Image (cartoon, rainbow, N blue to C red; front, side, top):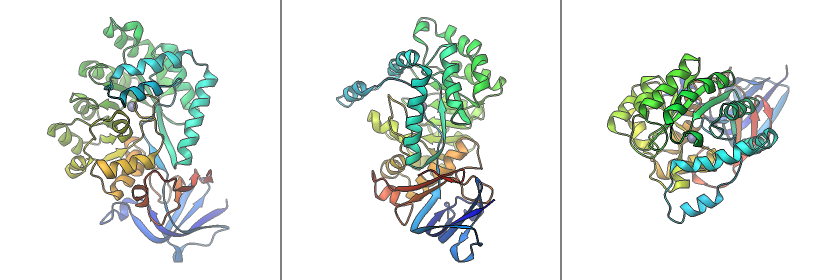
Length: 390
Ligand SMILES: [Zn+2]
């Protein structure tokens, strides 16, 4: 197997845990990375790099791990431009807008859904995302939820069953009946296609008892829990996530001190989704408070057509630095190693021997430019599983 060295890297972000102290990003200056097959086999200073068959000159630019987007909703159809436009004209966001996308998604063919999914994955890849999670949640029938997961599983291992996104319109007067469906027949149909189970624990969606029933049923079927929690209001979601050892509590915008303490003393990652606050003109989650308490923080896009229609991890990094109290280093770490932790993965989100060769080359000398130059398409090279894709 032939090896490739990427050399003349001004700033290499490794997220190597053995280099964590004092630098949380495991930065190496004047660095090189050696790739063999789909894996990283060596990282270090350029002058010490082993000889290889192939050589790529990074030209004094920055290399970092491919972004790990641990929260997206990409199996959908339809458009919610009007809703966004109205909301930006003063109407508040409520969870019910999801039903608009449900109607369009049910009406779409498999080919239409997959074409949309593929389009946004390509868009995300061009912006440096090499690992992504995505969910069902716009079908809300047994057949439509299973279909969404089947389509998603063709493109990623990180597939999440979110039948409990909102109560299906057919069950508007019988939410208990819908929870029984989600934890029964629908779960049976969906579990073979998914790794994770998720629930939108929020006023207007599912309360704490319902959320517990959904996640517990999923665990019994071998799915691992994650949760949409504390987005629009305070609530029981974060505590439930910690209690059930969920990999991640996502949103975390409205947290009590007890919620922050619970996250800081658990293996549950706080995944912040600033695209949602941006696109709904809502109050920002306080990343500083979580980090200072010792919680692990991830940044993800929440890419979906209603409340956060961005596939851009660099955009989320810039927002987190500008408005959520994160340093540029913390935001880059949250978008790489943080996302990996939210998926309980150690083979992505870091550039160390044995990890997947998922790399981003920036047209900039430092990862700090992701926040310093917001909105600028700095990603100029992307390797995924050792293959240059961009
Ligand atoms: Zn979401």
